[in-house]
Amino acid sequence: MTIASDYQSDVADYWNAERNPVNLRLGDVSGIYHHHYGIGAADRSVLDIEDEKARDEAVIRELHRLENDQAAFLLGHLGDIRPEHRLLDAGCGRGGSSILANAAFGCRVDGVSISRKQVDFANERAAERGVADKVRFHFRNMLDTGFESGSFQASWNNESTMYVVLDDLFAEHSRLLARGGRYVTITGCYNDVYGLPSRAVSTINAHYVCDVHPRSAYFRAMAAHRLVPSAVVDLTAQTIPYWELRRESSVATGIEDTFLEAYREGGFQYLLIAADRV
Image (cartoon, rainbow, N blue to C red):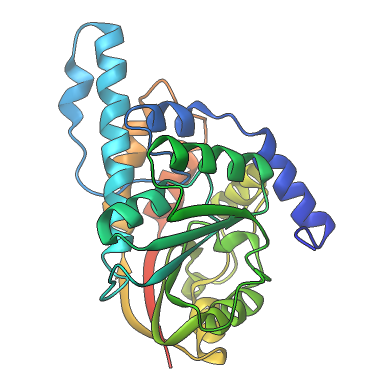
């Protein structure tokens, strides 16, 4: 069963109905559609362009560059990927990271999502780019994909772990990865050094119908499922410029100040975690 609970049905309904310009307008720049944030120094000179339409278009292009840089950073941690390998994009959204992975490595990529609308959209984009023979998206649950055990060299979640129980998720990734394969996630998590989630984190949960996990839960669940961290990178400072620019853009959603507050107060972090399957 692809959708296994009332909560998963609510999440699927949310993403089936989602038509947010912050995802679609950015994707229109290059035909690569993401559902995650950006990292790196933002070129704020785009805000100085006098013509309103030209300024808006320049800001959108800059935000898209930052989100592409985030995806490239994740893919750069997948290890030694060769054309004969197979990759899994768990919680693939509209497929941007999968298409970039195929372009980077030339290998087969499978993406899974419980949103049928996202899956159909992503498959259409793969067909348009002429890569549908190698990049395929499936209406499947990332906790129970049905793929063969040990069939993937690398897998990832890009800002999708907050929708699932981590033990269930890492058990499935561990099953799917070949021995020595690599798992990578970029995710927001609350810093449990500070105790319970802050008010800002609770607001983020309500906004996205998700449940942000504590940082420690990732390492505990990985250890329980034969995933040994090989790299941990705190990207919090690197994502703040994206949020500052997005706050001043035409695609702001109103959640920007909450993210900035959460990051700056120290109770919320943006991490990359890479782990090897042993």
